[in-house]
Amino acid sequence: MNSLRIPILKIGQALIASIQVSLHDASAMQFKDDLLDRIHTTHARAVIIDLTALDVVDSFIGRMIADLAVMARLMGTEVILTGLQPAVAVTLVELGLELPNVHTALNLEKGLALMELQGQEDTDVVAAE
Image (cartoon, rainbow, N blue to C red; front, side, top):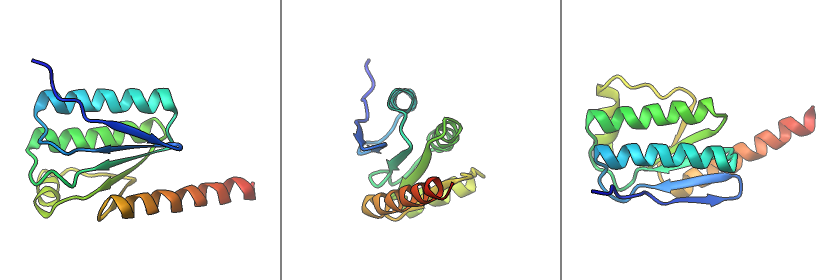
């Protein structure tokens, strides 16, 4: 049985993945592999993972999201999680998952604005050097 693939869009130097379906273990692992591959092939500077459609996550999916964020950061890509529903945020905290250096935003629109703001900060740092 093929797992459902989550679309990953490239906009400028960023990738946007909006999860619009319930993730099961196989589809979550496929998503992780796909996103890491796209980060590598596109040299994306940022990735926004929109979780608006997820109203609940289990421990496997919660850990996969946290691990994916750490892996992307290790590859030099800024990570922004958007659209965390209250139950998802509660689950992540109850699982003791930490998301160091991962930014969050209320929704995708605010995540895009945050990404643009960070891009301007990067440009300012390069210009000052």
